[in-house]
Image (tube, rainbow, N blue to C red; front, side, top):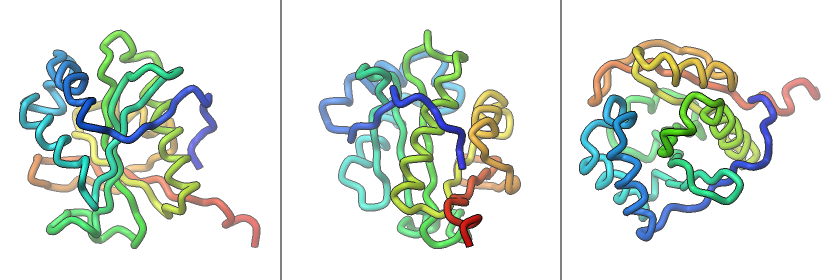
Length: 173
């Protein structure tokens, strides 16, 4: 299970009204290295609003928007490279859009809170796939409890597939 985190992180469904905010965040210098072209990323995220396989959210800290997070079901996406994961597995991607909040533990906190929510909703496993050179993201995932599964080649290039399993109830038998 991920570590318990303060309850100040909340997740509200992404709407079309959030697009200007996402555009500002995606234009920030810290975003380009991992999310690529801002216009392309924005259009991809916009497409998730009505998706059946991706659930997009705005991350809020004490009621103020600070980032974006999404969960997706790899089994509902054609040719997803993670369809070998157990049924019910959900993948996640996210970013902190506010530059001043980078490096202050919010990544670990919001990921932990989101994973806890997905586990409470019944997900048996959560996966993520940071770029192998994104040491800060890998460290944040490891602090939550994610373990490396291995490197994979995807359409976006090489990634480090990581997973955390919902162990709730396994020790109660």
